[in-house]
Every structure is written in structure tokens, then in C-alpha cells.
Length: 325
Ligand code: UDP
Image (cartoon, rainbow, N blue to C red; front, side):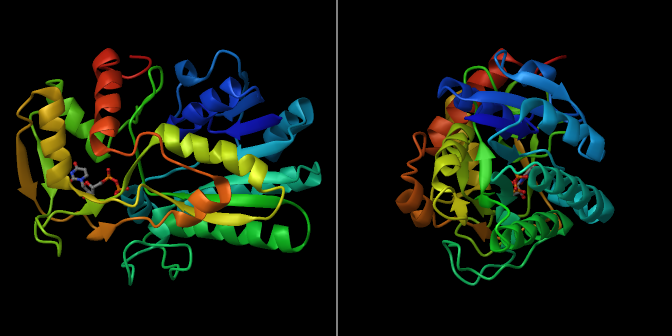
């Protein structure tokens, strides 16, 4: 299949491109390199440097490559930033997604896969969280993804395309060649590993007074290669029916448990300091992924937190300054 991947130079996008190419697909990466890295783009992918903010830019890419399917990763994705600058999300994320969808529909492309998020589930009533849980976006970021999910719903209902929206819980880990390199970095596992590399003095733990066994927040960490696998599987499944899927390991680990695992793996004491809560954080987010397992045959290959952190540690150790520095 010919797959156009927006954001294919970014973290989850670049690993998905790697798998799509290994599986024999032809891939074009559309990316403005604002957050992604040229060095993350697979050498066998066609690279189209462009910006979703400009309709003619994405129209040009679609006309040139003529994909059978589009995967849309390119977006701003920080909850905290979205609380500070809501229009980057309610504006740019939504407008850019709309530009892409209009282009896709106008060119008759009928398969679309959206990167969505667990940030649709603020204060969930039950854990683990399945696809029937009430949607309560936790931030303008979550809302921007939900707006795109709703657009896709109506494009499906009006017969324009079929889609899968994949709601990632906490993406983490790395392949041998591709890992997490954000500037600034805000995610727990890469920050912890920067301490182990001697690049930071300590890790700040955002609150230890949550309603969890050790008081720190619990998250469902899922290996980036397992998320990529879900995209590959969804590409074929959407020919039957549009669907939304929650993707996680169905296992939660607290911040303290992540730190302890990273200490064992790196052999570094990783000093930590408890500070105040981070606005927008909820106590516990754990996915119920039975639907993805049943419908897609999805089975995470690296479900253990130790495997996830080990793979990230290998990548950060080999790339102490990320891709290009
Ligand atoms: N966290 C932390 N210190 C940090 C970064 C994150 O204690 O420097 C916590 C954060 O409060 C959350 C968990 O680690 O409970 C995972 O945060 P991350 O930003 O990695 O992902 P999120 O859950 O926000 O998508």
C-alpha cells in the first residue's frame, strides 16, 4: 500500500514508518520538521517537506504521491503547553487537521488513521478505561483530538472515508534506531534517563499525595513499536469498519515504580525530589485494550515496563544528545 504519514519525522510517526516499510509498504513522510528530525526519517521513505497550515502544500503532496491511506501524527501534543496556549491546539491542531481531511476527501483517499490520546478521559469513572467511557477532554490538546475524531465520524457517516482513531496511553521506549527526542523534553522516562546520563541533577516528582498506593500518579506505558504495530494492523481493518481504539498494556505503574525500575536498569541512583502537582494531571490512567486485541489481533510485543525502559535507555545512551545535536 502507499501510505502518506504526516509527522513521520516525529517520535511515534518515525517508528511507524520504519515498520510500514519493513512490511513492504511504500511510504511518503510529510513533515515541516518543526518538532521532528530529518535523521529520524527512514532512508527508504520519500520525504516531502511541507506544512499542513497551507492547503496547497498538502494538496501538492497528495497529488504527487497519490496515497492509498493517510496516517496523521503531525500535531502539537503537550497537555501543559495547551493549557498555556490554547489556540496552538484549538487553532493550529484543528485547522491543520481540517486542511488534511479536506485534501484527503477531495482526492478520494478512503483510509485515514488518526493519532488520538488518553487525554480524552479526564477523571475516568472506572479503571481500566475502555472505548465506552465518557469523553471528557482534559485540556485543549485533548479537545483538539476529539474535534478531529468527530470530524472523522461524520466523514465516515457521509461515506467519504473510513478511519481508525488510536488513543495512545503513555508512549515510551525506542527501537534500535529511533527514539524520543523532544525539545523541550517534558516526559517522565526520557527525563529520568537524562538524570542517569548526568545531564540533569535530579527528577522532580509532580506530587505524592494522589489517591494511589504510593501517592504518585499511575500511567499505562506502552512501547512505541507496539503502537506502530497497531497502526499497521488498523490500516487493513478499516476496510471493514471505522473504529476507535484505546491502546495500552492494561497495566499501571506509578512514578515511583518507574524511577525504581530505571535505577535498576541504569545502575544510577537517580535522585528525586517531590514537588507540587502538575496542573492537569489525573491520578490514574490505565487502558482497557481488549477491543484492539480482539478486532485487530494486536498483541504488544514489549509489555513489561523493564523492556520499555531498557529500550529507551539503550537509545538515549547511544544518542545522548538526541538525533542531530
Ligand atoms: N512526571 C513527573 N515528573 C516529570 C515528568 C512527569 O513526576 O518531570 C509525572 C507526571 O506528573 C505524570 C507521569 O509522570 O504523572 C507521566 O507524565 P508524562 O509527562 O511522561 O506523560 P503524561 O501522562 O502527561 O502524558
